[in-house]
Image (cartoon, rainbow, N blue to C red; front, side):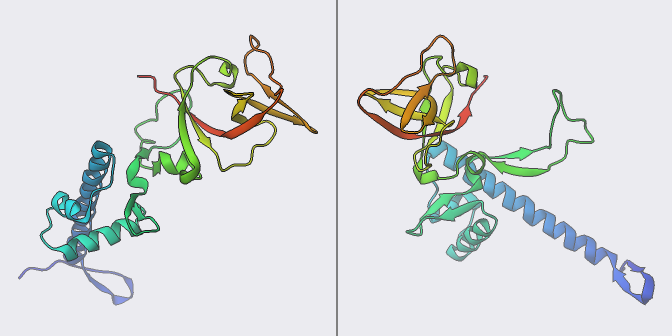
Length: 220
């Protein structure tokens, strides 16, 4: 049988074909894993839940439960998925991971720059406390100069202690609003980001439901 060898310094002989085959095997395994990650991610987006172990087996084409467990363990190690306190599967970066190609300055990256820099989960980027975070749709333009426009979605973290200067969701005298929080001593004022609106000072009651941590806008 023909074998290809290459000699390196110090008299080390390497079977180049074996190294090539090893790299090819690794590439094939990575491609299969990425394909299975895409399938599970698609299932999650379509169904709004994580697949069960048996459904993962069907997606991956496995007949063996052991093969499914090995795949799940590998996905956990790579942080694609995780488990909650009860051991149930929950999405990790698989929920909404996007390719990150680098930075851009008012244009497109050049072909030389368009290389995979990282994968980025929007959940991990935007949400610090998943159990304490909720989403609201914006109506009204009182925060337009803060870059928050009607139709935008805001992420609100009810676990963060509100500080002066934060944008908060607050119930003021029985009515809900989103404004800048301004504290001065014992005085609290809610400040709009639009000169058409006046600051609000609570007359009887102020409840802060959470701090706005991010704004999400779709253009198409």
